[in-house]
Image (tube, rainbow, N blue to C red; front, side, top):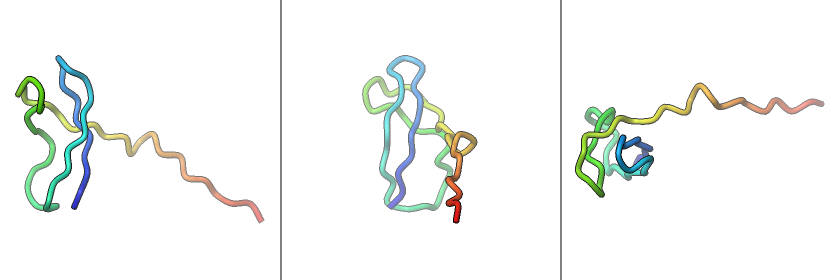
Length: 53
């Protein structure tokens, strides 16, 4: 299973579980208002921690 975060212009961010990694997961319907919402990409904000020895 995969978990994705989406952003609705009306309701804000929400998280959705998908049973499969197949298909286009760039858009989905907001569970509250049913507006098409775009996937949020946080990968550019990840700063890997490099251990120092």
